[in-house]
Amino acid sequence: MAERADDKGLFKRGRRWWLSIHVPGKGTQKIPLRPEGESLATANRDVARAIARMIRQSVSDGGGAKLAAVDMDGIIQQFQDANTIEASRNQAARNAGRVRAFVADKNIKHPSSITLESVQSWFADLLRDGAKPKTILNARGCLGRFCDFLVDRGLLESNPCHRVRIPRIQRLPPRFLSPAEYDKALALADKHGILPHVETALRTGMRREELRRLTWADVDFERAVVHVVEKASENGVYSPRSKRRRARAIPMSERLAVVLRKQQAESGHRTYVFPGENIKGTSGMRDAGWWSDALKPLQDAMPIFTRDMGDKSTGRAWHILRHTFASRLVQAGVPLAKVSAWMGHSDIRTTMIYAHLAPGHDADIEKA
Picture 1 (cartoon, rainbow, N blue to C red):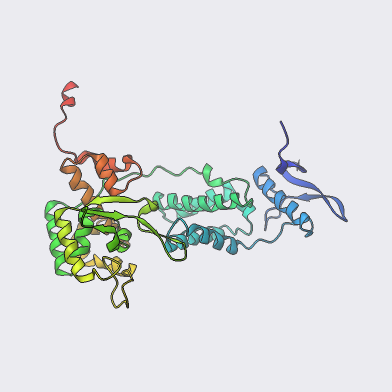
Picture 2: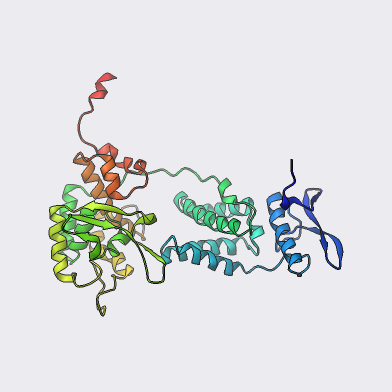
């Protein structure tokens, strides 16, 4: 088998990896491959390859046979900037925050210190601190993207997150409003001045952020369609109005058309369907904080919006309206494939959580 370029000069003393390398003016040197901050050479071949690669680069640059200092915070900031292309600025900042927490908790001074052991240890710490499997799954996804970022730039040999197994997450049935709760939610929304927002959510299944970013250019009264799309801002950074930047078209019901026509009379001269207050000119969406607080009257009056959700429930409270949209369609006999398209699901298996709501007696059961 041909020797890998990364293996040139690598050898083991006991269980530890060393590098034999020629340094101009000093001859051949044998160097223990120690991760930053460690007293012993690594026993991990992948880590050894990553450290050796950086030492070779240091020698090539005239810096001698040493592990060059790395600005981890600067690397994380680069990751955040790159992540902004695919996610919102807030999401990119949250992802970078998770990575910084890992780097601080595990005292990571150099990418070569990111190993399967350090990643597993961090996840174990999160579990001991009470984090739920869903939180661990999100952390693995975020840290995995960061490690991919490092691998792409030659700062890490391989992504250790790919080898981490997370306990299977139990999917609970979707929570949605009963007919009586549906009517009560609309009555409360009308009383507190948020009827257009709530009814649009109930009749489109749009996510909270999609509602916040909905513009009049997305509303096509002539074709009776509401578009959920992506849009690049002036600086070229995507402002995702659909999750994972997946566009979709939602048919506009007659009732929704009435709601939006009434809203158009109030904000049709503005860019956004639900614009912010006291904004000069025509642009300016409502602040995310407004949307976070908007459903408080419904949450205070209707237990379904807060049951088993803890304090941070506003986002999921809006999501109940989305679940209600899908559930009512399935209960009415609308095909799952059509519901999936309107919901913007990338995989119809996601829509299958509503399958048990489909009406009717299946004649095939008589064959049992």
